[in-house]
Length: 218
Image (tube, rainbow, N blue to C red; front, side):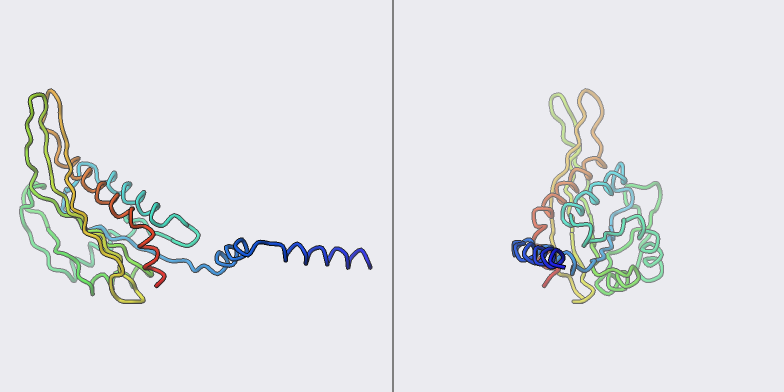
C-alpha cells in the first residue's frame, strides 16, 4: 500500500517539474487544427520547357513556407488541374488566340476572379487556396562574343485566399528576369529562362514565410 502511494507521489512530482515552455508546446500540438490548403496554378500555354520541374519548384517552396505537415495539409497541384480546367470552360471567358507557343491557335484562359477562387476553394474543401499566376514578356535575344541566349521578364502573382475571411490574406507580386544561355552553338531556351524567373519569384515569397503563417492565425 505504502509502495503504491510513494509511486503516485513520485509521478505527481515529475509532472510538476516539467518546464512550462515544454508543456505549452505539447498543448499546442494537441490542440492544433489541421489546415487544408489547395493550389491553383494559372499560366500561359506552353510556358515552360519542362512543366514538371516548375511543379517541383512550387512544391519545394510550399514545403518551406508550411513545414509542419501535422498542421498544414497541401493538396498537390495535379489533383486540382482537371477540375480547374472544366470550371474555366464552364464559367470563365476564354479566347482562342495565337499565343506564340503552340502551333496554330491555342485557348488562352483569362484571369480567375475572386468569386471564382471562392467557388474553387469550396469545391476542394480547403481552408485556404494558394493562387499562383505567372505571365512573361516576349523573349529577348542577347548575343555576346562567345555565347547567345534568351532573356525573359517573369511576373508572378502569389496570393492566398481565405475561406473564413472571403478575401486574400496575402498578396505578393514578384517581378524577375530569367536567362538561358548557350555557348558555342544555339540560342538558349525561353522555356528554361522562364523557369529560372519563376524560381527567383518563389524565393522572394519564401522570405515572407513567417508573415504568411501569421496571417493565417489572425
